[in-house]
Amino acid sequence: MNVNIKELSMKFSERWTKVKEWWNALALREKQAVALGGSVLAIFIVYAGIWMPYTDHVSAMRKRIESQEKVLLWMQAADREISKIEKQSGNSGKPVSPVVLLSLLQKQIDTTGLGRNLTQLKQSSNASIEMHFQKVAFDKLGGLLIAIAKEHNVSVVQMSATADSTPGEVNADVTLKN
Image (cartoon, rainbow, N blue to C red):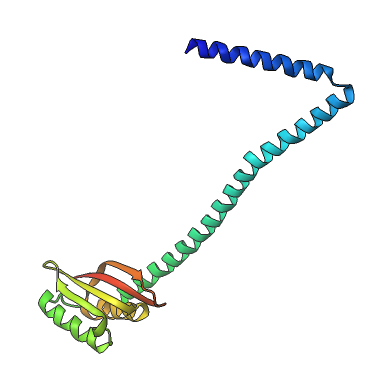
C-alpha cells in the first residue's frame, strides 16, 4: 500500500511540474484569461453545486410548512366541532349493552341507506364494536357516525378510511366504544 501512495505522489508531482511549465510558458494576457475563466468556472460550480440546491431545499421546506399549517388549521377546526358535538350530546345518555347497541346500529345503518355498504358489524370486546364498510360515501358515513355518537352515547375510538377509485367513496373500518 505504501508503494501505491509513493507512486501516486510521484505522478502528482510530475503532473504538477508539467502544469507549472505550461503556466510559465503562457503570455501575460493568456494567464489573465485562464485566471478569469477559472474564477468564472469556480463561481459557477459553487452556484450550481451548493447555492441552487440549498435555495431549492429552502423553497420546498417553505411549501411543506404552508401545507402543514393548512392541515393544522383544519384539525383545529375539526377539534372545535368535535368538542361542540360532545358538549351538545353531554353524558346524559345511559350506557347501552353491546348487544342492544349492535341492533340499534344495524337499524340506523339500514335507515341511512348504508346497509348495502356494510360488510361486517361485530362486537370486538365487552365495550367496543367494529364496523367495516366497502365503497361507502364518506359524507354519509361521517353523518352516520355523528348521529350514532349523539344518540347512543358512544365514541369513535379508531377509524381508518382508504380512498376508493370512485371520488367521495372510501373503504372504512370504524371501532366504537361505549
